[in-house]
Amino acid sequence: TPLPPGEAGEVWLRTPAAPRAYLGPAGAPAPAGDTVFQGRWVRMGDLGLLDEEGYLHLLDRERDVVKSGAYKVSTIQVEDALHAHPQVVDAAAFGIPHPVLGSAVAAVVVVRGELTGPALRTFLLDRLAAHELPSRLLFRPSLPRNEGGKILKRELRLLLDDEALR
Image 1 (cartoon, rainbow, N blue to C red):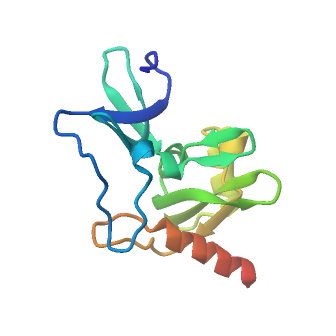
Image 2 (image 1 turned 135 degrees about the vertical axis):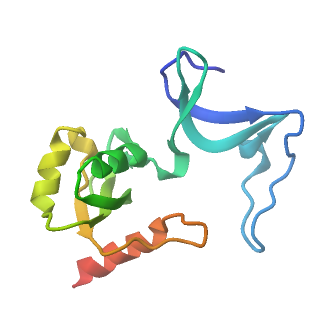
């Protein structure tokens, strides 16, 4: 069911050439067909909204949304706020386990010059709601990426785990 303009929801695609099956990497489990394909509709795994003119604006990948307590936090919005700081060169936000909330937001950032965690948090206070603020911040010289340039958030979670053990 289409949502009204400005309201976020799941993105589904309909096309005459819609696929009827999922082909993934060898050995990877395929998602259940009824959760991805319905008739000629295909669930894309993205969250988005339509503006008043009917244009689609993608907000985040559904799997990257952090469910923190009663809130859903867009990692893209957190990353945009981090990138707004003039000393932040690169940033990635993602969810980490939290004993009370289920998940919390964490971020790994690459900065130019001297920037402290408290200074970056102060900067973010004007740009993010309290539940969107990263509970963990890690500064690194670079972010791990795959051959296509996509940030490997899985590896960043491991970096945070390693830091916690030190």
